[in-house]
Length: 71
Image (cartoon, rainbow, N blue to C red; front, side, top):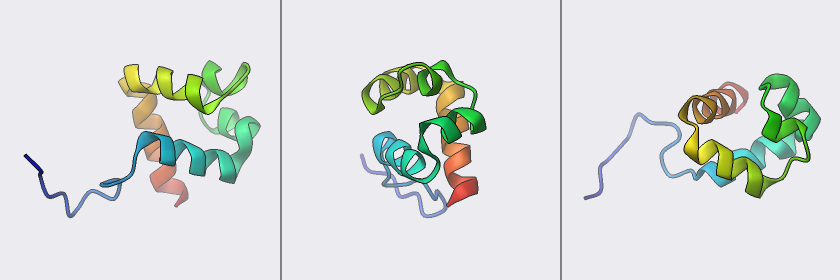
């Protein structure tokens, strides 16, 4: 079942694309300063950050909120 989400600004965006765009904009140090997460501070990578964010809802919510505030 596909649900229409006309009022959801994140509709159609993957977590990976959101994270890549934030890293392009802020860089890892800037992203770690905006959102205090170890996955952004200690040897950061897209793969390790996605693994953490996919299983940690509160952290994913912070990343999505920053994306919405930035773009």
